[in-house]
Length: 355
Image (cartoon, rainbow, N blue to C red; front, side, top):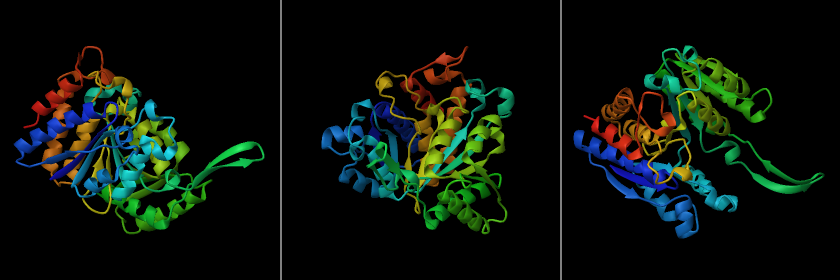
C-alpha cells in the first residue's frame, strides 16, 4: 500500500514521525506492507521550488493509495501573495485529489474530561460527534477580488454551491449517519443566504433516499451556541466548507485540545487525504512538545477508510486510550497528577500498545 507522506512545516515533521512509527508497528502486527514516499508541500516547497504545491508532489499523491499530511504554513510566508502562500497548496491538493468530504470526528476520551472547556455535567458520559464538511466548494473556492468603491478599496469573496456539490457531500453524511445513531443535523444560514437555501433544498431531496435517518436543520449561529450549551444533542453534522471549518475548530475545544482531532478527506474512490486539523505551530517545531495524537488518529482513519482495516484502526485508537488511561500527557493536555511526556515519548508509548 503506497502512502504519500507530506511532513510540511513547523511541527509537521515531528508529528509525522510518530504516525510513521505507529504504521510501522501496524505493518508488523497485522502483516500489512506500507511503502512511504516523502514529498514537499507548503512552506517547505516554496523555499525549495518557489511554489506551495509542486506538480510532481500532486502527481505522486494521485498515484498513491493514501496521503498522510502533517501541517503547512507559518509566519515566515504570511506576506506572500495569496496564490503563493502555503495554504494555497492545501487547497490545491484537495482540489487535485478530488476529495470533497472532510470527516472531522470530535471524540472526547473519558480520561480527558477535565481538560475539556466544558463542565463535566454538560459532557455527560462523553462526546462522539462527526462533522462532515464540504471541502472543495463554497467561499474558499469562489470568485474573489478587490476593487475601488465609494469608500475606497473594497475586497469581495463569493459563496457559491452547485446542487451536485451539495448532493454528493450530503450522501456521504447520510451514509455515515446510517451506520451510527441514524440522525443527521444539516447546518446552514438559509434565513439569509441564497446558497444556504439551495443547500437545504438539496439535502432534503437526498433525505428521501434515507427514510431511516432523521434529518434536522439548524442555523449556523445557533449551532455554534448549541455546541457549547448541549453538545450531546449532535451525532453527525453536515455543513458547508466555511461553516465546517469554524464549527469543527470549536468542537475541538470540547475534546481538550486541537492536538486531539484527526480528519479524513474523501472523494469518490478509496484515495483519501489524512491530516490533523491543527496548524503548523512553528514555535513548537523541534522542541519535543507537540501532541502527535491527532496525526496518529488520522493514520487510524486512513487504515479504516482507504485500506478497509477496521481491526488495525481500532487497535490504534485503543492504544491511544490505553496511554491516556496510564496518565501520560503532552503539554497541551497536561493535568494535575498526570505524567508529562514529549512528542517522541508519546509516539513510542502508543506504538508499544499496539498488539
